[in-house]
Image (cartoon, rainbow, N blue to C red; front, side, top):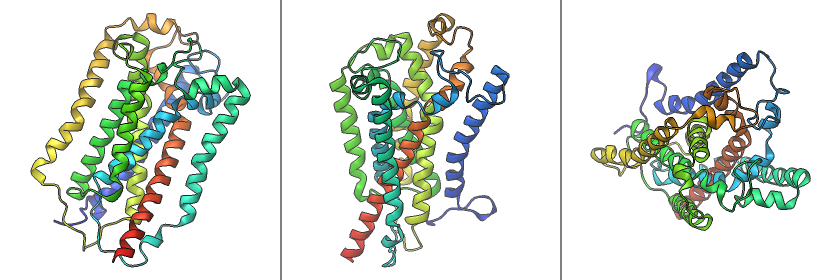
Length: 352
């Protein structure tokens, strides 16, 4: 089996896969912005109120620190999950030169780590300054589903429960597909344990924050989860994360001609893909069917700034509401992967 498959013009298929992961989010964001320019009949929207609560401009939506404080726990766990997943379905290791581990600059790890810490610190400071310590803690401890709704412990986590399962499963499907199509299989690497740690944390926090029927039947929860799945999680957060990992692997962990044989038998590949695809299809399908049975216009009329909106309107600005999520997840994934990869390569070199 060849270690590197090639596509059109002789370029590696891996590069095309990576480009796709980065280009689709950019296309969606540009498309959403252009849609809003037509809807609002303005070319510049940064000072235009676009949020469903009727008070936040596009610029405030992009730098929505209060909302990000609600998202931090879930997005941190997701970052651990996808990095661990990338090791669990890992790249086959080649016998590398002695300088290989040192090719990962410590400055890149440091800068990405500072970026992660900086986003967290700035978010907390700004949220505390504007809304106070109690409200900041309410957000971080998952009490909030909206600024206009009463606080309820664990409500934000439950408001993302099904959509997070879809995000995790879709990410696993994408990584498996990448390994099968672009690499011919995978091997389990040292830091695959991050995958199990993240999965365990997700289960423990889901228990701690409590289960309820809201995730499965409450209209606002169903609508929100549908918008999370298709309005930020899969088309942007997942693709940017996967693209970042593939890019870093191609640069710092490329398997050479001496690559070990992949341990995954080709005959079982479809079963691995189906294992992750089934929950994505079933849960997404269930949510879509339930949402289609709702009176969408009536539900949207309950939102202060969305009485005259269409469904595309409520999706368009939402792509930008998670801008800080995208920056945080990409930075955290970048930091975690380079840190663990350097540690693994250094350990392997010392053992040789």
